[in-house]
Length: 360
Image (cartoon, rainbow, N blue to C red; front, side, top):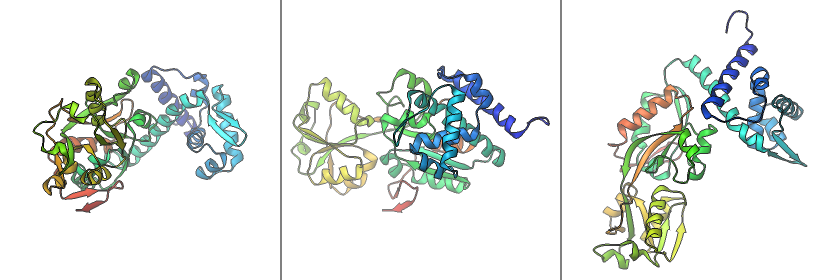
């Protein structure tokens, strides 16, 4: 900010550069008057828009941003007038985003995120600090990350790590809107298999490691004594699987589809721990990473079946939006993941979603 520039003018100039850069880098246009947006956009309006887009309630938004409801209405109307399009539909007491509002939402999120990161960087310099939101599947978080997290906390105590589950179908959206800074994702391509070409172009991924995927049954299952298990042998079997969209489940389903094999039924779980218990109880066959079932295999609670079909092993990547500012905290965590994940031995520990280490 120069000597003749007010803080408000300086913030507007920052918004102007951020919005222009995002419009250029994403190669997309929002149906609004960008010149008006660049000149008049207020940080407060963006903050209120973000809150209302998430809450879809003027009352809850007012509470969240610590203002009165009438001010929320005024700020949203002013923003809509500046953009030249309605961002919300008011349907009686219901509030919903319009199509223009949905398209504008990721731009607003990223503009606010960029400013928040900028202010944090000015306060903290180059030392990693602040909040880092990481998406991670249960199997990786529970069985691969504990020592990584412990080492990272000791080295960078000013960084607040927040781990969140995510669905594969919404991963790109979570990254684009800034709800996740980065994610650890199990997929050979690093991007969800059902993602469009445009999503592939917006997501950056780097390979961390490969995971061995096993077909599992209880000790007394008829297939447990077979020397080899072909895809056709799964015809009519009950399969206990992770949620749809999971990378290794998708690989198995592709193999079965190519061989025209139909399982008897599929029981879907959101928890790998529940799958393990159900396999041991003889409820069906399961597909899980070896790291998840090492203890149960050693104790002979379940058995690895001799799968002879195409490999179901899968790669693990760390991914983030290509336009995201890589903060010192994010850079440090990515480097530690790349350095430590291959030789991380977590068989004696587990970690919960809030990052708490538990002894077995």
